[in-house]
Length: 266
Image (cartoon, rainbow, N blue to C red; front, side):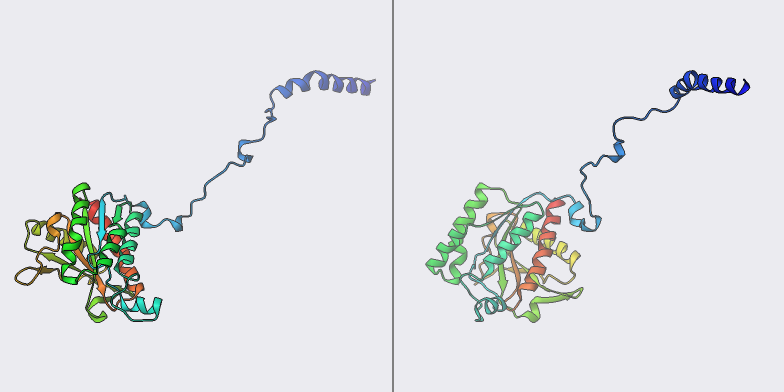
């Protein structure tokens, strides 16, 4: 009898008490846990974030042209065509200018190169060396009249040999940069200031990469180099006749960064 009573009490507990206890137990959701959902994500590789990527980008407009568009580098013409040449119709300073433009575009700068069709017209006319500045002047004048540029670069290469136009820094070889400023025009001081500013930016990155600024004037010298057309115009000589493509590319990278910093602080 006692055992039967215990059985009935157990049944009563199960029927009446257990449902009450269930109400206080935590309920399980029928939906999957949010932590188990696979959300699309973007992986950031910190090792791939370069210092340049986090710097503010410069703003500005740069015009690049070459009065002596035929100027070439002997190691490049030899590598491409098998012949050493200081002047060439295709492997010349124009391709270097195009690379500089690309470096500036990466920095966020609006950069353009004087239309190649204009240069081709000048090449076809076979304009003498001493008349080149006068021949290209109308085209440059039109550009600076219709657009405002923060920097106008007449890009050349020097005729000096590699011993005077090359520097080694940090295990890398660079083509040296030289500036030529004409002093016989009203914008001389402003052009000179711009050249000094860019020279300082270059030296910050690679000490010794620049040569002294060459001031031109007096009898038998142009004295202007079309720099009277704009207050931000400079003549820049990148390396010399014997510099290699690798040396030029190293300098172009430094030049692009330096111009970006120059325009950033203005």
